[in-house]
Length: 352
Ligand SMILES: Nc1nc2c(ncn2[C@@H]2O[C@H](COP(=O)(O)OP(=O)(O)OP(=O)(O)O)[C@@H](O)[C@H]2O)c(=O)[nH]1
Image (tube, rainbow, N blue to C red; front, side, top):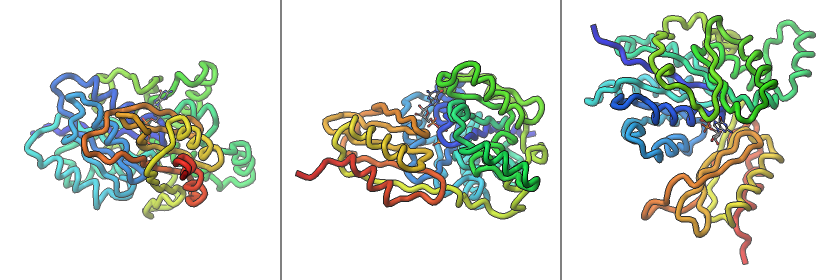
């Protein structure tokens, strides 16, 4: 009997901390364990892979990372995910574990179901589905922008089980979970955190564990080796989208993303302030990328989740690398691309 390779699926909304968790997992995985990583990202810049590849640990080998950037993994199961998995399994090097980071907008259910496809079923199994929840976003009510209005509407219309696209997607991600990590606990006070946890618990299947964390710091040995074989239990993990739209493709047309290149920026503080203003003036859910700061020998990684903008120099520029600023912007459709672009271009130096 061949032993199947365990695969951990990491899901969770945009900016919840999936990449941060993966980085922690790779850094703290048992020595000698070879882990392959499949990264799927909404937006076409490949920021997550770049961040992970910059980690420098023996476990973050760039050749063990595969990027699926052609749309959300749940919509590209047949065309992209299965062939990618087959190619990974056909490699001469053997992996002990596979980790899949889905995009923040992915429905986990189609991906879980894919593990029942004969092409891969014989060789891999889902060790566990881990859903990362953003405690700060939940505490601030960012998933249901007007929860009271939605509830009032619900009371009037029993058929209306449709929340905001964000709320619905988040519930699909929770119902798929074998374990939920409530992340960003450092940003939320304990009483509110308790409420967040209660709300999450109400959406989970019985018995699903909840772990609280900051910066994805969880016990990695508990995370790898859950042995859930989740693909066998897919019918118990309902998805709003699948129930309401049958087998129709999930188009993600509720969300939009575009990337922007700035040849030069005036300076770090000015750039971050400009981004903050753009986020406040437009409905941007997520913004990330890398910036070339004048005079800096390292590139600046920029991360914005909702109103919170952070930045750090992640690695030195490589010799010959083009020093430029690339940002990806994600939000609910329709994004006013022209206005957001104009707003972000204020970070460029004013011509003399
Ligand atoms: N304060 C705080 N920030 C966090 C925590 N976890 C992650 N972050 C920050 O949140 C931002 C988003 O984290 P990521 O790990 O990139 O989130 P993600 O879920 O991979 O994002 P997408 O792939 O874009 O959906 C980064 O700036 C992280 O440093 C946490 O526990 N506390």
